[in-house]
Amino acid sequence: MNAFLPADILLPQVDSMEKWAVIACDQFSSQPAYWERVRETAGDAPSTINLILPEAELGTPQEAAHTALINKTMARYQESGVFQTYARSFVYVERTLESGAIRKGLVGMVDLDAYDYSVGSVSAIRATEKTVVERIPPRMRVRRDAPIELPHILMLCDDHDKVLLEPIAARKDSLPKLYDFDLMEGGGHITGWLVQGEDVDAFEARLADYTANVGKKYEGLPGVPMVFAVGDGNHSLATAKSCYEELKAAHPGEDLSNHPARYALVELENIHDEAQVFEPIHRVIVKTDPEKLLADLQAWCAPEGFPVTWYIGDRSGTVYLDKSRSQLAVGVLQGFLDGWLKDNAGEIDYIHGDDDLRQLAAQDRAIGFLLPAMEKSQLFRGVIADGILPRKTFSMGHAREKRYYLEGRAIK
Image (cartoon, one colour):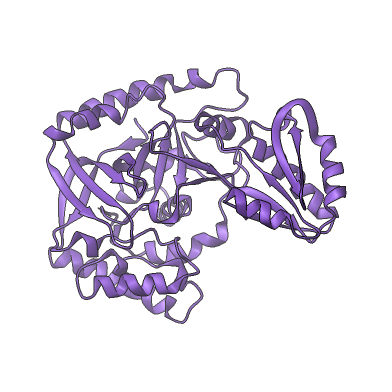
């Protein structure tokens, strides 16, 4: 069976889709004013702001009260006819970003039995970065009693030949359009089309063939090939997995193979989509002895290694990191820094902009490393060969380009 499947998808029947759709809960976590504006925009209209717990509220007095209210609101929306169900469907999505690029995706459900976020996983679906298990319990408190789910999860395929999503994109003009509107707070534009019937069957056949042959791409690599990687929203998918495992533990011996909690709604995207941009996340170490750090790093270098530029004050140079240690330059560097900082003074920070990195490295007792952008094909190869990638390996676009809550699915 495929690990990504059509679902009974819920879509709202509301007057304002702009008020309905809000950005992923883990964005703008240090900017409560953003979420206050979202609530003001939504007002009394049906909105997903009433169905999620923004991480900006974690640890605040309103967290517990809001968690209890979320499930009641979900039930009220169901009972009052807010949702329409599209059975055994996908939703083909085009997201127009601020740059004008259009990012394509397909909303469906994944089989949680095919997903494992633990280090060393050999499952068909894997996390790209280490899961922080402490972030799961607050989300479980929301999902445990929730009658529906709303995803902000972006799952990736490594489809060089563009055989999965692109044939649907080519047929979009013949598909029923479900929504077409501007997202609030500068999120760009989004359009969705309904995929049913023969188009679902054709996609499933293509995916079955893709899955059967995906291992050929990674011949010669150590490790077990995988089919999908979780790009964004891994902690939400890990929460769904944890709730499903909790349900199985509470019902030993019962057949839960068709239980809705076995699945989770996601948006599948192709890393080879032209609009899919992986931005590097650089490293700066402050309050340290930069000369000692650089000298010690030389031992991790190799003549034909990954070239990485370093900055100390107004000086710069290049080190060549040993490729035998990892599939990625960031993997070699992070491995060195983790070990070095256990025995030496220093604090590490993760920086997105090139100029910001250089400015921070110009401080006293600081050193910065400007990492190259990761090639798209390196993502799957890195996870397969090295396991979970180092934290802060890459960024998939800017905060406002993250997924907005829109489609839903019943999980009870």
